[in-house]
Image (cartoon, rainbow, N blue to C red; front, top):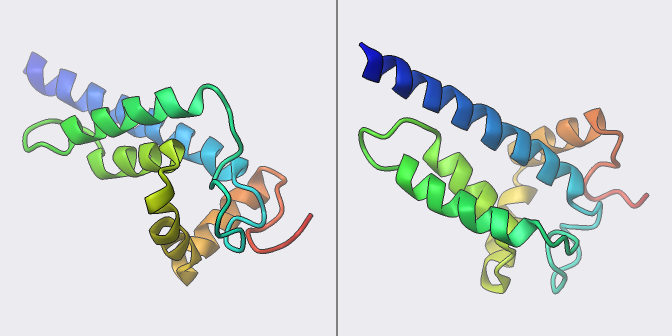
Amino acid sequence: MRGVVLGVAVSVVGLLVSSAVAYRVVGLLPADTLEARDQPLLPAHGWLRPLGLLLVLAGGVMALPGVPGQGLLTACVGLVMLDLPWLRGPLRRLLARPAVLSLLNRLRQRQGRPALGELS
C-alpha cells in the first residue's frame, strides 16, 4: 500500500511541476515565434538549458512502463527549452496546429501576453 501511495504522490508532483514549467515556457515564447524561422524559440535564459536537459531525462524515465508520471509532456517541454536548431521547424509546425495554437494563446492571455502571431 505504501508503494501505491508513493507512486500516486510522485505522479501528482510530476504533473504539477511539468505543468507549471510548461505554463511558464508558453509565456516566455515571443509573439513572433511562428514567423521567426531562424531564431531560437525562447529568449536566452541561463536556467533554461540545464532545466530542459533535466526535464528530458526525467521524461524519459517517466515514459518507462511502471514508472508514474507524465513522461511525454515532461520530455516535450524539456526539448522546447533545449532549443535544438534541428527541432525548431517541427516544433513550430506543432505549435501552429489550430488546436495547439488555440490552447497556447489561451494560456498566454491568462499571463497578459500577446497571442502567438500577433506583434505587441
